[in-house]
Length: 502
Ligand code: AMP
Ligand code: MG
Image (cartoon, rainbow, N blue to C red; front, side, top):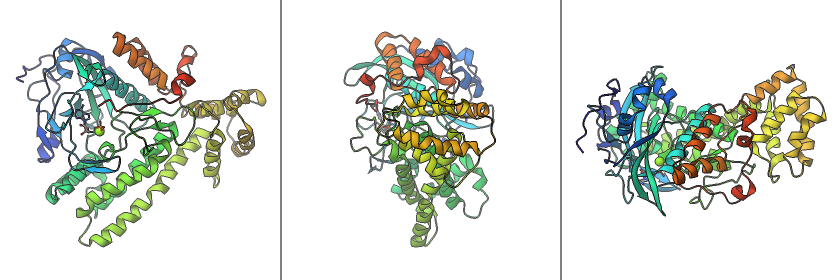
C-alpha cells in the first residue's frame, strides 16, 4: 500500500525506541487497506493527554488515519513478535497476528506510550487468522478498558475505534473495525519467552535492559537489575491482580502473552465483571476447565510469573541451580504480596482505617456471607456503605435484601460493627470514604451486550456512548442511572458466556 501523507496532524510525531533497540523482535509491516473507514469514537480526553490535536483527528482524515489507510508521513508500522503459554500449552511463536505498533509518543506527563492498531489485517504472525477484528469485540475492549481506567486500575486504553466498511467472517458476517490502543508498552511475558526459546541471550539482555529503562528505571543502577526486575514484576502483578479481585473483574484469558511487563491490564477479549459472588465464576466459552476462573487469577498470575522467571533465567547468574532456588523463593512470596494488596483494598472497601490482625478473616468472612446466596458483589459493598453511614436497622434493609438467606450475614455484621466502632470516624465520613472506593457502576454484562448489539445490528451507538459516560464516573451515584447499577436479569446472567472475538 502506498500511503499518501496525512496533512491534518503533523504534530503526530512518533518515536520508535522499540524498533531501534530490539531488532529481531518485530517485522516491519503495513496495515491492510480498508474500503470505507468511519470514525465511530475518538477518546478526546486521552488524545489531549497524549498531546494530540483531538479536534483535527475527529474527522474523515482521522478515520483514514485510525484505519491505517493513511498514516502521517514517516510512520513505520511493525508487527511485534512474542511467544506464550495459552491455556498452559507453549507456542514458541504467536506475535501480532492482527495488530501493528505505530510507535511511541511522550504524553503530557512525560510518559512514553505505545500507540497500536488492533484489527489492521494479516501479518507474518497471523497463522490461520484473518488479521481482522469485528466491531463487537472492539467496542467491548473500548468499554471495559475505559471502565478499568476510571476505576483506577492500570490498563491499556482505547484512543479510537473505526469501522472499516467491510465485513469480517466469523460464525456469521460482522462489521469489521479497528481499535487504536494506547499502552505503557506492549511487551509481554511472552516477549521474553520468544527470545529465550530461540536461545538468543544477547537479545534477551537487550530486552531486559530495555524493559528496565522504560518501566523500572529505578533498577538501572542497582547491583542486580535482573533479579530486581523479577521481584518488581511480581510486585506489580500482585498489586494489579488484587485490584481485579477487589472489583470482581475476570480477565478470562490470562495467557502469558496477555501479561504485560508494565503491569497494565491488556487484551480485553472474553473478560467480564462478576455479578453475583461466586469464586468459581468463569464467563469465557473456551475456558472449559475454568483455568481462568475468578478465584484462579492470583495462582495463575503466579504461574505466569514462574514462566517469566524461566525465560529470564539465562540472565540470573552462572549457577543455574542456585538461580532456580532463588527464583522459587521470590515466586513463593507472590501469594503473600498479593494478599497484602488485596487486604489493603478490602480494608478500604469495608471502611476500616486501622490495620488489625484479624482484618483478613473479617474480609474473607464477608465474602463467605455471599457464597451461594446470589448476592451481587458490587452492590453488596455499596449497601454496606449505607449501613456504615446510617443508624439502626433501617440502614441495613438494603443489604439484607440482597441475600436469599442472611443468616451468615447476621452473624458477621456485629463483628464488623464492633471493629469500625473502635475507630473514631464519623459514620457519614466513613460511608463517603467507602463509596469512593466501591463502584456503583461497573460494566454490567447485559448493558455491555445491549450496547454492542445496538451498534452491530443497527449502527446505533447511543447505548455505547451512554454506557461509556456512566462508567467514566463509577463511584458517583446518579439518580437517573439506577438501571446501570442493577445486575443482569436472570435470563441474561444464567449461563452468560463471552467469546474471544478472534
Ligand atoms: P489473543 O487471544 O487476542 O490474545 O490472541 C492470541 C494470538 O492470536 C495473538 O498472536 C493474536 O495476534 C492472534 N490472533 C487473534 N485473533 C487473530 C486474527 N483474527 N487474525 C490473526 N491473528 C489473530
Ligand atoms: Mg493477546
